[in-house]
Amino acid sequence: MRKDRLDGLQIVLFGGVLVFAISALLALINHQGMSDFRQFYYASRCLVEHHDPYQESQIWAVYAAEVQNMPTDAKTVKWLHEILLYPNLPTTLVFMVPLAMLPWNAAVAAWMALIVAGFFVAGYLVWRFSSDVGPRFAAALVFLIFVNSVDGLSIGNTAALVVGLCVIAVWCFVSEKFAWAGIICLAVGLAIKPHDAGIIWLYFLLAGGLARKRALQTLAVTALLALIAVVWVSSAVPHWPQELSANLHTITAPGAQDDPGPQSGGALGLMMMVNLQVLFSRVGDNPAFYNLATYLFCGAALVLWALKTLRTRYSPMLAWYGLAAGFPFAMLAVYHRCYDCRLLLVAVPVCVDLWQSRSPLRWGALAVTLAGITLTGDLLWIVIFQITRYSTPSMAAAVYAPPIAMAVVGVFFLWVYLKAAPAGNAEISLPQ
Image (tube, rainbow, N blue to C red):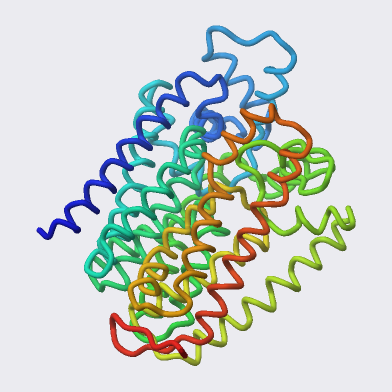
């Protein structure tokens, strides 16, 4: 193995070990560690025990029956009630049932190992794709994404798993290897988090040829998984659609955890929201206004992106360009938090390709990629909040910076994608 490839591999391996160690440590020492997994775990246990997982009171009853030392302070009790309100699709419940059959500590260990392994494999495959032309550079970018992902991993959110599955699927499809594994990975991602995996699936559907075939095969598997989940959950909870709708209304109400407006209970601090509603709500705190403004901006960009994809001959390298251009607008259009932005992994091959080609765009690609990684990542904000003690200016910066960074990433890579043309399986032609 060439020395530069060996160096790159060691950097990626070190990043994988580091992200696992720090995430596990945070999950253990922080009383809010694995908070999102706690929701999925007890909602699934609720289903297994023939209770209604979409009724927070019933999840609370299951939780209280199994936890020996229940908290008594009002702040912690309020937080627990918030995280035990289940707002996700039935498919997530069904996938979590095997873990829900395990004791809590064993389930946490298994889930942490699963999401970190998937995330690490995704990072490794991205590095491997670019390792022939820029092994150290690609490894450095993957390493930065790894170390900026520990907070999201430590709470056990399904985004950590879905991002890994999506990137693995992309590698399988563009490399034309292990297609069946890519289909399963993307189908599971779609079933759990369609607002994350959907843009990946849509690209391959629009790209035509073999890529479209893989997208349709993925859709068939997803439909089967969804059917099984819906039938199972509906047999136990026939009114789950209405209850899910009510739960979503609760968590997005003014002042609630997922409200993008100025009074949001969950838009500040780490893991900020990145959807553009956060920015437009500061102009006018009215859902009719900030949703329309967001959809117009993202919709226009995605129309251009879709037309380019439909009209351009598919190539494996161009697929990375298309995905790097499309996914930021999916993040901006609807509710997403910073941990969803780890899909920036798909931009690594593009950044490496532009850098090694000596294109005039290479500095722009590097700048926007680094901005996307750092401003939606953990490390910068951990340092800033520790220094400023969550002062008002730093909190305001944390609200504005992630969506602005993701918008800049999207606009830049969309502009590059619109100018790009396939010049071969591993080459892209760009105007000089």
